[in-house]
Image: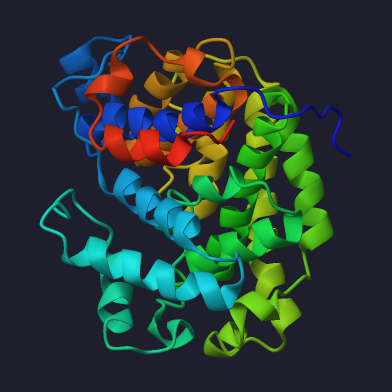
Length: 337
């Protein structure tokens, strides 16, 4: 049960949208480094400031913008209305000259198939649960929609490229976490509430949004297909609970919740950073960036979580003016709180 709920506080949409980009940018230069290499370059405190003007982001922010604009432009939030817009935005991203930030191979492979005009259930990479499924989903959690629509949108945007059920389930949990935070739920409450969501949704296959995707995986039933994804998310949340119950040694959270190249680990590790540093938003980004795993995705999701909880006041003055795509981030958050 949701313990606390309020009306959305001012600045939380912008805080989350910009927070994702800030975390992405902070983790960009450390993504393929070990913690020892990060410490050698930045010191044991890790990177704490954004460098450049503009400060460059990665494909994480680019694809989150693609999702956000598709939702913004949709005349109604139905699968029939949203799918063509997501496809259009993803294909524009794939063909863009700015798509030069080490994009994920799953997204590129799926976009190549989408460009052929295939139904998305055939174009998707059915066995991929990479974190590309949920690094871009946080704009879904910022919508004023019912939870069934939120879940359907989260699954659809993931499914266009990542067809694995764990990618779908982790995307829903990521969007749900942002939705909860925006409505006033505290960061410390999230793991328990997400665990409840897993239990409630374990065998819910959203056929109106997913069509016959389950058949591509040769699953016995739609329920068996989606349950496998929820079960892997449940295991990741159990690791998160164990990590949060132990004292924080300040080390790499990837040792506890995974390196986050896959969806359920990206969610768990980003949540660990956000919960541990609920009172230090920049510290949450730094904790994500100072990891041996997918540092930009971890820090980006942590930024989206903390920003949704605290709003734009979480972030240092001047960052919003220097971040790449600032005009789009501002436009997408204008008038939303």
